Amino acid sequence: MNIFDKLKKQIRDLLSRDSVRHIGWVYSSRMVTAVMRFAVAVVVARTLGSEMVGVLTIASVVMGISERLLEMGLTTTMVRKMSMHLSRGEEQKSASIFQRIFFVRISASVLFVIASWFVAPVIAERMFGNPALVMPLRLAGIGSLVWNVWNNTDGVLRAMEKFREVAIIDVISHVFRTVLILFFAWKAILSVEHTLIFNISQVLVAFAITSLMLPKSFFKGTSGGKYPLKEIFSYSGWIYAFSIIFMVFDRLDVLMLGYFREESEVGLYGVAFTMIKPFELLPETLNTIFLPKVSKFTKKIEIFRYFKETLKLTSIIGALCLLLIFVARPLMMFFYGAEYEQSVQLFQILVGAFILLTILNPFNLIGHSINKPQLFVIMASINLVLNFTGNIIFIPRYGAVGAAVVTLVSRVLGGLLGLLVLKKYLEKWQEES
Image (cartoon, rainbow, N blue to C red; front, side, top):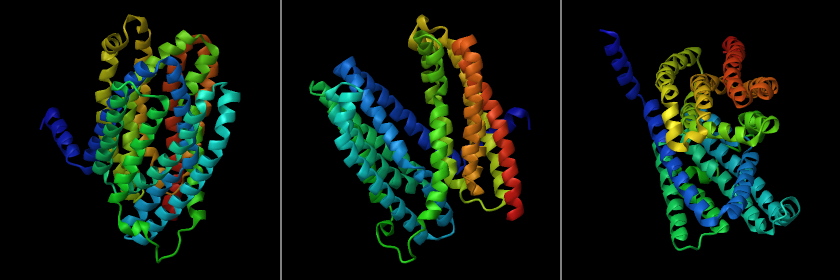
């Protein structure tokens, strides 16, 4: 058997696995919804005008930050723990986890909505000097509540590995939103408030459909007692800390580039970053698919089998993504024109960082298998320190190229150091097993 036959056999083997089919469903749905979001963004921008788009952007950012802060790492915690208990046939415990986290989400989100309703006028007028922001900010508070309750039901489907259903629901809800916005834009009655309401409605539709698919036992009282909140928060606290650190790390390059260099250079870097975004959906998809799988591992042999099988998949993906380096120039010229030719080199460097992210991220998920969520905080902190230090040194001297190179190098060094930390914890976990 020659090398090409072996490669074809490996590809056939990969395509026959559930994991690959799950990745296909989720990634395809994310690409489809990304296209719909882009089309809607163009229509909204043309309909509302730059001033109202600015109001919409501020409200949307506030809603996104509020949702992330209120999420508190509970979704990842729920998927991890529910996957483990479902694999052991402990459905009562899974239902109890769902109910306890749902109650926490509702309580925190309702309190936030009430507070934001009264605080919105103060923020709109004193911070932004724009009374038109009052209602959009209030809607942003409501949106953060809806997002959080949907996270709870979506997490159950992910724990049950119903990724085809997750993908279909995502597309259906986005179609609903897209139709409403396009209809109101066509009738020339679209406003900032309408757009926000339709964005929230999309999530509400996804929540409604998902809720109908959950086992009825999840909405009833459990006979096995309430799941300990201490056990939930002792895990979610670390995930919450990780998400905050990662949120800073993820856009630190842009913030520091904006501080040290001209806006035009930030624009060139921003375009390169925007071009890489559709491909960055892949590492996010891998995390979504593999989280419930690794949460079930209890033996060393399962973990090392996962390393081996995952590396086969991500290596093939990484090799294919290397082609992006060679098509970067025609892609950039086609979408953005000659004005952004300098973004080509930045895009090519960022592709390398993306490939490393795709290969290394699935390994890091083993932190869930060995029940060490603090690993994610350690890894994110390492990357944050490396990124900040590198940017301080290289951005003032090399500008956007320096920021891109630091992003790539920090991924390499951070990934290697993270693997060493993981190895240390894994060895200790093996001894305890």
